[in-house]
Amino acid sequence: MKTAHAVGSLGLNNKYGLRISSATIRNEMADLCDQGFLRKDHSSSGRIPTTLAWRYFIEEMLEELEELNPVMETEFKEKIFQNRFNPEALYRESARALATMTGNASVIIANKAIYYSGLSNILDEPELQDIERLKALLTLLENYPILSEIFNKLRGNRNFRVLIEEEIGLKSLDKLSIIYTDIKGHNGEKGYIAILGPSRMNYARTFPALESIVKHINHSMTGWR
Image (tube, rainbow, N blue to C red):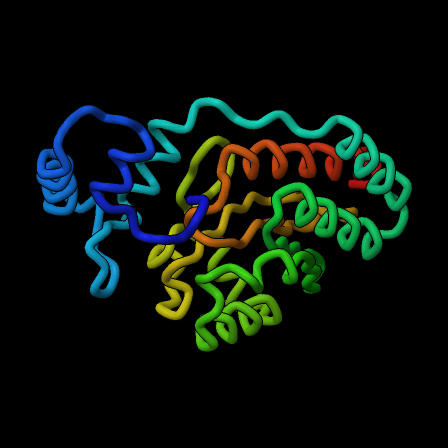
């Protein structure tokens, strides 16, 4: 999750001091490969998590979520509320706040418009050094019909929907994940707010950040639906 590099048995032993042989670790990793949780990336001797592994991690192992920076959250809350009478400004500020809080890209679709922020956060990620994957992401962020189709997929987690790698349905986005939920606009129209980033993103930070921004959007919309 921190380096985007495949992990090998020696690296695990050195980092965590497991006090077992590298051969034992390799055997365990081989078993996890057979079960579909790990895979070999290119010619590397190390392993990386599969979609099955990421989903297991998110749904079964991710218990401790990060606490948001209270100063930053208060600042964004005030800016979102200040723009409550201007839907376009509200969505742009919300997208910017979410991107800043998570370090990933954010997107909001509402009233047939798309608002996104944080591309500079993820352009340096190894996963997006592939030009085809980068082009696919940029195309996605500008395509309302495709985004709407993706957001209509139903896969729940912690009040959010999570699509990991091939679950997105676009082969060129095979190493990315999307976390999203629906929102209601000023006239009660349905929209979506989402985070896009590497499948190894910091989920412990992303979930509370998304929950916080949605809460502030809903609060700002009170009385306008």
